[in-house]
Structures are given as structure tokens and as C-alpha cells.
Image (cartoon, rainbow, N blue to C red; front, side, top):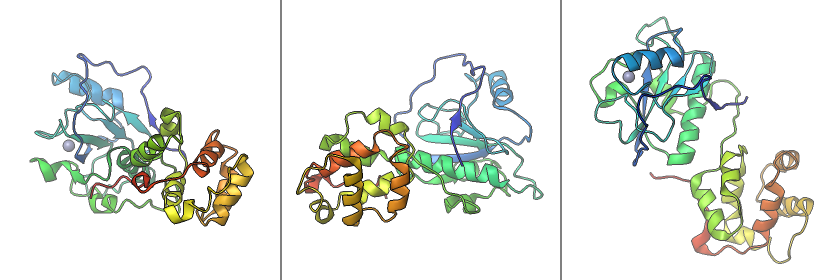
Length: 267
Ligand SMILES: [Zn+2]
């Protein structure tokens, strides 16, 4: 399953420049009370209200497609007194109607999107619009509690970009030269691999000798108990251009305690 945030074509045109948000402390969920409306429709309705354009940061349609509205890092117009420090996600559909159950495709895309946001901003809490501001949105039958469990429906697995905390640790170590590349690569277990590798007692076993080829690097990681699923990595490393080099670089550097690589976790 491939998830991505898509941009509308033709692009949404805003009447004024969008501002970057300075703070991001929560995610706020909405519905847009319409089962057919496209991002362009919502954009049009919000412009008629006198706004710059669509107020939500991102939209998730009932078929699971994810659309950029203002963009993840911009100030939205979606929840009174919360726009400067929250990300607004709107789900297509009428979740004040008891007959409407959120389709699995939409639900799973929403879960992916929230996990994606958590990988960038840390594990910020999730609210329904009506929990932070007077509103019936996102509807009494919106699956808020289920969403907060952050578990996909069905046997779905998904990939996530590396967390900013791990990325920063790798930059500090001089293990990666090109952080932008790693921000865009979705590697399912890379974050966990880096976290495991950073445990000093494990990494010390890797660095006694320089490692110069990818196969040896993977083999040593497996022997060191850093990879719990070597088959995955042997399959994956050929698909991900720089993973092998990253592993070699990691194995050829020693990690000091201040270089412990951790998950982004603000709680
Ligand atoms: Zn709302």
C-alpha cells in the first residue's frame, strides 16, 4: 500500500500568500460534511467566505486519497483560536449521520497521515474540532477513539519517513551527507534500525574493523542483533539507493553517548 499527499492539478490558487506556522502542538480532525466534494469544491466554498482559500492543511477523501490543502507547515483557517499552532485534517463525509461508517481506505489513509505528521512534529495529540472549540464537527459518529489508537484496519503495513530526531542524530554524527534524501525515503523499519544500532554495546561490536561493502555491512548488522528481520533488509537494500552506504558509514563511526539516536517523542 502506497500512501502519499497529492497536490491538486490544476493547483489550488490562494488569494494571499500563506504563512508558515511557528508552533505545532496538536492535530485537529474535521469532516467536510459532504460525500462528493473535491478539494477544489471546498477551496471554492472557503474563498466565498472571504478566506485565502481552503482552510484545511490536508484532506482525506472517502476513497483514501490524500490531498494537500494549505500544506502541512502553513497556518490554516479551520478551528477558532487554534490555527497558529495546529494542523487541521478534514475527512470527506458526513460523520454526524449514524449510518455513515468511515470506509477502511479513508481510515487507513488518515492513520498513515497522522503517523507521518508524528514523524515530523513528534507525537502531538489528536483532537476532534468540537473538543477544542464549540462545534458539532467532525460529527458524533466520526471514529475519534479508534483513530487515536493509531492502528490500521486489516493486515496493513505502511512505510514512514525517518523521524527528524533520528535524522538529526545521523547528521550530527556525520553519517549522512544528504538529509533531504533521507527525508523523502520511506523505509519501513529504518527508524527502528537506527535506534537499535545506536545502542552503544551493540554498535561497538560493529566498529572494530572498517566495513567496505554492503553485503558485509548487512551481515555484521545481523550478527550484532541490530536487525530483527534480516530478510527484509536484504530485499530492501537493493531498492533503496543509499541504505547500504548509510550502514557502512554507521559501522565505521563510533557513537558516543550524546549521539544516542532516539525516537522523536515529546511525551
Ligand atoms: Zn471542523
